[in-house]
Length: 140
Length: 140
DNA sequence: GGCTAAATGCAACAATATTGCAATTAGCCT
DNA sequence: AGGCTAATTGCAATATTGTTGCATTTAGCC
Image (cartoon, helix red, strand yellow):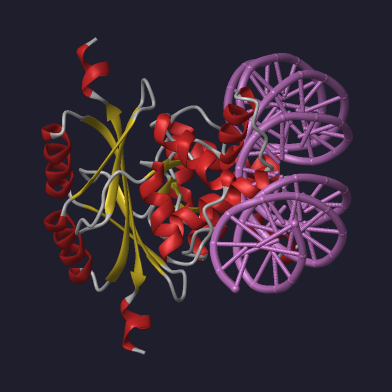
């Protein structure tokens, strides 16, 4: 829910503004990675206007609290669908329909850390994105 | 070696041009992710000029044969340091010095595929990048 | 309703990336 | 070695993505 994210921001001293709600709404409704300009376009279709700079700033803010993530393989942003999980947030992006699914797995992170550690590397953060076919598109 | 990459390109019918060798040289000497414009700057310092479009095209070509990779967390390109391994190519990028190390692990890929499969997703490709500290920077 | 800090809009610009077409060059053939 | 031709590169223009400083507006508070 948009309201949940807004409350988290408020708890940190950030205001519950109309632009922030609009961006969160779009991210929540369209579960695919969206660029700031995509978001601007969708809002424009709905008769709303936000400056792209504003959208960039809102996405930065959301990402800084893990309320959204940037999906690097597509460059778009998605609303975070996990809360209070252990392990880094991973994404599965469908090549066909673009739909995105998020998950986390503590053990997998640990294994990755161990593997890296054996190569002398001390991991602090993982980036992990899978591309392939979601179940719906795989059926076809 | 630059020459090895060049031979692979030639085997595919691509020419062994001076610009291709120059880009490969830079990637091989500087083992950090470099943007096309970084590469252009380095070459300029050496008194060589390449148009940035040319560099983009060369990097695209190298990536299409896995002779180079784009590191998405930094947006730069690196020369591939593995050959004929099984499993996707993963990167460990040092937050301090920017140095990059590449590795692959077939079992890790398999585990990732299995995890995704349990969530209904059929993985075709992994993106996996770690950030943290290389051994040298960790000592400090 | 008015006040003030926070947030947004605006304008300009920087960085990154792509396209079409003209000029050049590598590899091949004498 | 010199010429031929397709492949490659350079150039110019443009698209896309992202950032900065400052004026204007607004949310949250009294």
